Length: 430
Ligand code: 4AD
Ligand code: MG
Image (cartoon, rainbow, N blue to C red; front, side, top):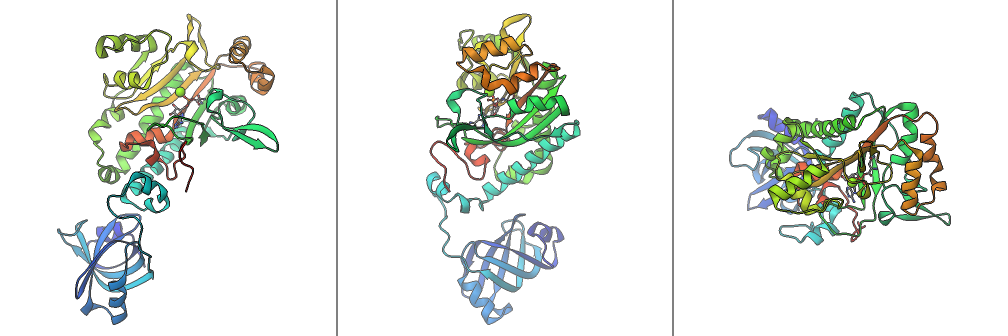
């Protein structure tokens, strides 16, 4: 029976059967060192000419990196081996002899991106994809644990929600429709039946900028809840981020080590409450502590967000943004109509906005006015506006960019490594 390499090392001694791919190989006259890789780990295997059949030795001699193999042997501790164990091989069956693997050391970012399908096998990508899996699982657990239903919205949509400039238009039998930027306009109608809903689904943004934070296709974790106050929304935003981070710290220390992530920089976010400050307070802090002057009413730019967060060791929730910089659906603050009940959660270390959310504007006339100011034709939004006509309730929600979260947790240089096949303005292949 085959066991994983990790299980074999846990067993630590005796006979084991493992299978996987050749991660490294080095041969001399009568001995071949094969480092075998599976999804769990790597282990050094030693094939001695004297211990195997002639055919097995011939196979071991010609095997190249990324060939697949089944190995039976005795495992024992060996401090010199890459992961502290070594298998002395009794039987080896090469399942497939690989061609010369195109990826070797010191290859350019472009080359690795062109060979993404093969680069996924790297220890780095494997570690990231495991952490990503933990994060997805944690988001489901968090919301289901709080009594939310999983709900799906369409990807082909008839209207914009987050501004026309990042819409992808698709030829839909001769009519233009858009790929979802968010589930929101199709989620709000559903809170009247399910009350508390969430999803994790792809969102699309025609981002024309080349940054380390933008993808054109990303996974969006969104929630919407009836009766939710602005504070409830912030609590869930903080709650789900913390929950996902804690799960990674519990389950993926090995992977964080492979990624050389400084875990001390993550721990405060798992332990301490996220400071909550208003936009106006943020401008004050920026001026006093960071010597950056932002005119009231201007959106915070990336550099300003990054400087602001440096004053805290955890993510920060910025609330009450000026109405003019935020989306049409955000609720006006009754005590100050210049600002809205909208919030962004900003991550430390330059990872920027991970979550954007708000309480929703309940008043039909105000929504219509703001849509018109944006040049939108309200008749296209009738299905949405009906949410404010039949039993409207206070409600709100947020969206979290899952790759932004993964990128921060893993300490990645670019968001592109937070997703198996990144899509950006420059790349849609392989
Ligand atoms: O702030 P955004 O645009 O908010 C919305 O879409 C709301 N309708 C969500 C809601 O209230 N249901 O996007 C939410 C999050 C951002 O904070 C960011 O993390 C992520 O989506 N995001 C991107 N991630 C990767 N690449 C991009 N191009 C992204 N654009 C937004
Ligand atoms: Mg936003």
